[in-house]
Length: 352
Image (cartoon, rainbow, N blue to C red; front, side, top):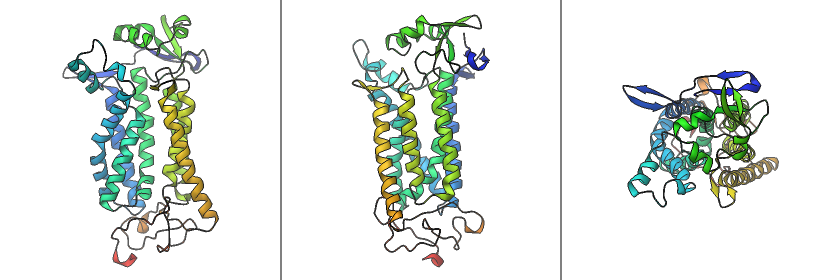
């Protein structure tokens, strides 16, 4: 009943709980994984910040700023586009509020979290006089790792799956699991569990299972591919903000394709909201990338902080701000990826 199976791959996991109990209190693996993701993301951002002229405190302070707003925005995004689950006939105000607050079963939308993070990043960097494109490039690694880990939280919750499939990559989930959890009727009525799934159940390990496309796994692998590319490309980047724009474009492309198969998508009319946002991300990031590549081709200098280590690491007066050609930059007349001159921050006297 608690099993998760990948019969086409020969993988059988007969007992996969979705939580642990400590001193009588149930803690969902989803929440534990999200917390681990935040910690890893912070450590990576602090490390990359030191290599590009910023400090560990910059990112530590930022993380303290953004943790609560990001979780709230992720939850708010999910509620807004799934409002009928929280507000409607037969749902009292108290029950509505309880459902909105209870995130132990999931219900955090990554796009909402990213939107919240972007807003906090803008406010934080303006207040601290930090160059936003430089700051954003160092966050990308942590965001991707957090997303990859977060999808495994979906695995434990048996959510974020696609439609019926009998392909080799199919994931089998016992029907009895949903019935025991008390979610089967709701998932069936809302279309997450479809008639096609019910009519094509498969007996796996002696249990009746729906077999679905593991969308969470596909997205996790896609994000891993983006992460590996960004790691490889980081010392080759041509301007500040390039890594973050590559991430936004790449994630949008993958999300658009994978979302098409999901049965639990948030909707706006006949459209899947995640696909709409994905297109907006691709268009915006693609336009910024093309605009700046054309500037570089015309010989325009763009600000570029590539990762350095050793004596040239952050805080060392000998570190240099490089252009795409790898030469020390001339700040006068130089533009950032938005076409504006970056905000100036006090640096060691030797570099001024």
